[in-house]
Image 1: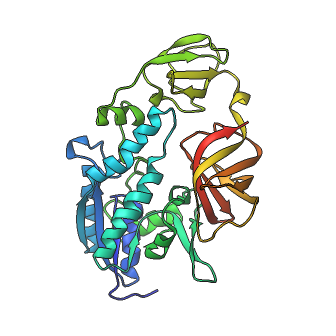
Image 2: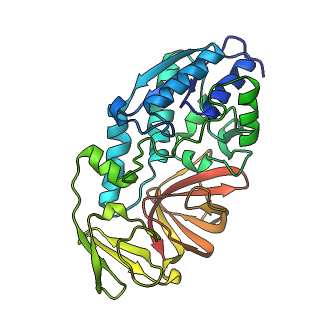
Length: 363
């Protein structure tokens, strides 16, 4: 595809993926404008592996310089805090486990940044995601997995507006990670050997993401009990935000045998532990905020495959759409650690059918 003169705004995180995306678009004849989002203050940078710290801005600028394209930094710190971080903390404070990357993609990258690209007169917005866009016979676009299933990021993209798919490009979606590295080396990108960026754009190596988020937002957390399945006290914790369903490490108690978080009760800040893996198994889940990509469901029960976390192998399941953007999902085999607050995404082959947010597991 040669598109001489057509302008494409490319989100450049400083990593090799987005830099190669920009390079491929240049080779195809596009006018490429590189943009990096500043989502945290300079003194909050956590080093080169965060996708939006000061080092990443420098890496993105260096890559843009090597490619000979204009590069701009957009100040989105307040929007990021209000749209991504605060809702994430609210989920943690309710005993749920949020997925900030999905929220950021929907509202920041494919919301505010896409609006910026349109205002700049751009033909498309491009990112370095391992995903693809397909088109149905009626011209309606749909989302596809990246060709490299090991790196596929379509799970994080299910909630972007369906109409936005006609305005985005995923230039590396047909490539493997190894091929992307090879391209970066071939054209001499300065970040060709750079490590992967963190999933979350606010990371805290010493404290972990939830506690780092609490400190950044100056929130308080109530201590509470660690109990077994019979309600017997095992110890105390300093905040339910530090726990997630299925968690095994960092529980703060030694029971003499492996233990996992079975459930969290935000009303009394209680964390229930179990020593039996089978107690974590669920037959299904209830999802809310469900979105369908490229079609309106007119079925009572859909056979597909699903994922309840990134990098999980797809699991056969049946999806039953309900009212008010809800759906019940029944797994062909029980799944462990189905976590409220996380995303459940529906697939048919490499096509993303839609997804929603896990409200609760079904036993």
